[in-house]
Image (cartoon, rainbow, N blue to C red; front, side, top):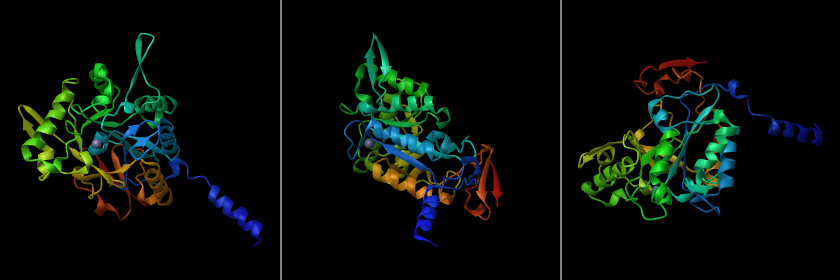
Length: 318
Ligand SMILES: [Zn+2]
């Protein structure tokens, strides 16, 4: 074979398009990425993603067949996605200003098109099938600029708007307490107060998940899961770490909701994981298109969690 022909062949392989979404074999035991963002601002830094880079992240996810799902739906195993697509969860920690900012314009308020909420909404308008889901782990009692997105006059309105649009609000403690450092009473007060302060603005809302500040667990896991302080009862159905890679499928025996790993959405980490799943399509969760069935490759039945969430039926494929 001539060198020229070799090059042509190599190019053909490299440029071969990925299989069409509907042709991807379902694997609902594959892993799921829970992405973790901090600041959306300029310039790009260790804990900051620029608006343009965040837009590009969404674009890359969309093109590779990922679709946004709410974390609570992932926990409940309620995944209603087209066949061949892969769920991805977005999380935002610390309620910094660039995550959700209003601009005062013509006597009214507009969502800043360069903040995370504005970018997500614009992207969902252009690609409705991508979805509009994310969980915001807010700090209701932190010092500025991390106190509920740093526009005090609009704190309540923002939390209400998040919930009204189908976003989730999660507990991140009252003011980012390192829970490993405190006795039980302080840990519980941080969690109950975080929820209570959120509920001042959205009274019936229950934050179902907790993101641990700095990834530090309290001495006893149970302190973080459920409790009651001065009449405020909290219960967390999942606890998120700050790192650890992709999460097991919610249908896997390995899925542990109290130790959910996340992927920090830095350029290097995100690129690594997108590339990882491109190269190992078998490792990735791929939907079967039916919200009532859990389709797994033949021989993998033993790896499925028991019981499955209510109403779901297991299907083995060849
Ligand atoms: Zn944090």
